[in-house]
Amino acid sequence: MKINIIFGPPGTGKTTRLLEILEKELQEYRPEEIAYVSFTKEGANQGKNRSIKQFGLKEKSFPYFRTLHSLAFRELHLTRDQVINKRYYKMFSNKMKMNFTGYYTEDLKNNDDRYLLFNLLHRNNPKIASSYLYDLNTDLVQFVNKNYRRFKEFYQIIDFTDMIELFNKRQKAIPVKVALIDEAQDLTTLQWTMIWIAFRNCETVYIAGDDDQAIYEWSGADVNYFLGLEGSIEILTHSYRLPDNIVIFAKRIASLIQKRIDKNYHGTGLIGNMEWVLGLEEIKITSNETWMFLSRNHCFLQKIVEYIQSQGLIYTLNGELSVNEKDIKAINLFEKIRRTNKMGKKEALLLRSFIKQNYDLRNPWYNNFEWEEKKIKYYRDIIFHKTDIHVCKIKINTIHSVKGDEADNVVILLDITKQVYINLQNNNDSEYRVFYVGCTRTKKKLFIVEAESPYKYEILNKWRSE
Image (cartoon, rainbow, N blue to C red; front, side, top):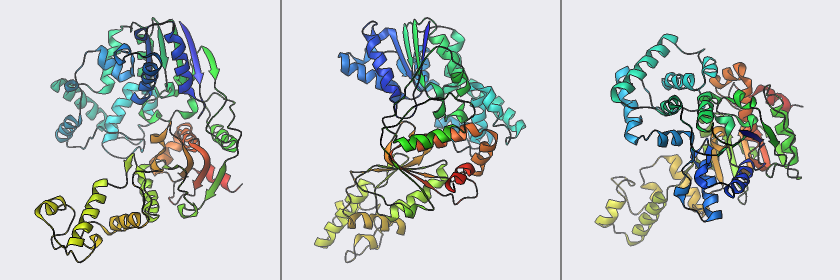
């Protein structure tokens, strides 16, 4: 087996390089003899969609272009009814007299879900799991683990980690000759075991990733395994996204990471803009460029939302548009009714969930809608500025949620929670990688906003005074 490792720093076209390799391999092998797996469904579909377009093939020709979980699901002949879902988590919560959602985030929150997260962590990457045990009740950990296992056995259901474990237990390889693996730095120890079982009969394996962008260690990603791979190495050296001075700053952040492979890459040849600001109000948001406002934790996003709303601008928060088109239609309908001074039964039904019981058609919509004052003011500003709600150039999200994305301008808050601060002391590599990913989303300008909370990336604060 020939192993090829491709290191792709931010904006260097790592996925594009994999797709070029895929096109070359498709000239020699049939689509069903090639596997293309990625950490995300979107990543796996990129290779499939490009091949369909390039070679005029059908989707069914690519049975092994999937995420690893999807691959295990297919090979195990599972059905959706056999997989744990929100209803089962609620049932388990009631039986345990705890609150489990089955939804885990990078915030490392102090709630019951962290006990189930530890269960998944321990099965995916035992070494990293031990570093998150410091603030858990060990007796409760064992109690949750034992009863979670019994609960799944009783209802004959499995979770996503069970899928990988069951696949590995079969020890059955996938009948492909070439495997391409994208975002390899995000694979867990358990998933690496699956990789070598699934693709052990391959002639060639291509593995692409970037250890400096390994930000899912909190969910079991084994970056040390990725760093220890042996094979033919290719480093992509030209970032088509980052201005030269942002590359220099990004490399300075990367130098704080102790366990890494040095990658000497360069930027676009242009000089971008980098500013340290005391507050969001110092930033002038231009309407002709894209913007990304980021924070390490979800709890700090509200501060950004309030500022953007005060500017009367459209944005997305965690991918959801800030303005609801139904709200705009309701406002327009109410104002149309006001002009005729008559509301029929049909109109009353349509507006029932919007207006007060004692509405008065003599007054405008904002005096009659059952909304909070903040929302009313926001919509009034949008209408006053005649903002096109179908054009949104501002994204608000956590850094973990935008890996692979980019914008003309990136704004990052230095604030972090106490939990993240503790993790920064215990495992600073993982947190420096997060900040590195955030800074390398920009194509033109980078704004770093001074922290208001007592916890922050302290070393970065020191750089500001240099």
